[in-house]
Amino acid sequence: MQKYKIMNIKTLFLVCFTLTFFNIVAFGQAKDKIAKVVIDAGHGGKMPGAVGKLCKEKDINLKVALRVGKLISDNFDDVTVIYTRTEDETVEIYKRAEIANKNKADLFISIHCNSVKDKPNVTGIETFVMGVDQSEASMAVAKKENADMLLEKDHETNYSGFDPNSPEAYIIFSLYSSAYLNKSTILAAKVQRHLINNTKLVDRLVKQASIFVLYKVAMPSILIELGFISNTEEEKYLLRDDTQELMAISIYNALVEYKNLLEGTQKSFLPISKTAKPKAPEMPSIVKDNRDTIVTPIISATSVTKDSNDTIVTLVTNIDTLKIDAICFRIQFFAGKENINTSDKRFSSLSEVKKYNENGYWKYTTGNFNTLDQAQEALSNVKKKYSDAFIIAFHNEKKISVREAQELMK
Ligand SMILES: [Zn+2]
Image (cartoon, rainbow, N blue to C red; front, side, top):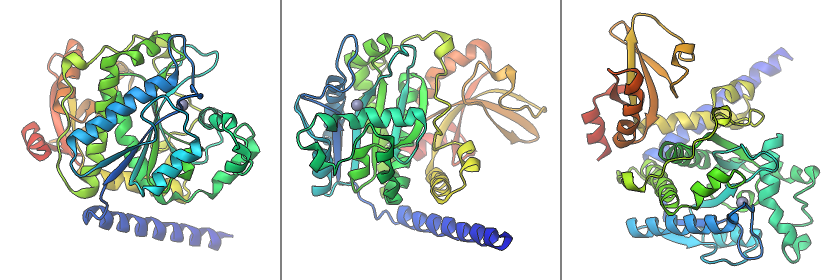
């Protein structure tokens, strides 16, 4: 028994090492070219998706999808955009996957809005990758996004009798090959961060769910839930033109970052103009942090220790390799000799508190921004409480000057 355990750990180590090694090789040599991207506007035609007080999900999905597609076509000469729909039409779930697979696309991005029954206070953005997660919240999203197939003609034949409402039916997803999971997760993490930094909506993190269309596409794929139309404030926010543009730019910039990472290129982000930045709805403070604790977000320290199976370990090693070329800006607000826990009560009004040690001093930072602009905007808020706060930059977690960071980002 003991021996078996030891061998298991050794094997696991070998697997991790091999995967990390191959990934470094893959990223380093820039073998992966992103030449075709499928933009999938969720639902459409006879399938409205979630229905809010003011709108139907399918309409927001389409508007944002078209904007993302246009940004890609306008700014990349080397990328073809393939839409699963460009108007309000019914496209079956299996056909969406077929479109992506037949075109041999390199990436599949599905755009949706969220809703939850009888919980009008729930808000926020979450991004899904394919994965078996039987938790209640994850299953609810999977069921909701898979439900359209019941309205489709011949669904029994097209989905081999799969019933999206039967928990037992979800066993088929355990057959999912995780070949694309690493890349999907890297992209999902970037999309989620850009969207949260730009909109300031609640961060519901990157998660896994058994979503049929993600299961069927043979390429890295993600499904974005832009916000909850079951919350009227968030619904109004999602309906705005400037919000939709902001969200599209966020998704586009995440794609730029992902493509840069894979291809070794250095394309810059599109700027977020201040005028195009609608104020996120003010939610009552009680629902500010309404993440579902039942869902295990796949990028978190807790999931690593809790589930040390191959999948999770692989994901984490990849997230680490992804940091190989990560530049970010943070706001330093405090320094001192005392080594304080970042979750200390004194820091409770600040988000993403981190610390580092320099010349014997502990220095504390808040926020984690992709661009200097985003950091500058947040700085004014931090300065209200910490008037000496200033912006610093990190390259792969090593402190560098802001000017150096800007040079590297060019
Ligand atoms: Zn949807």
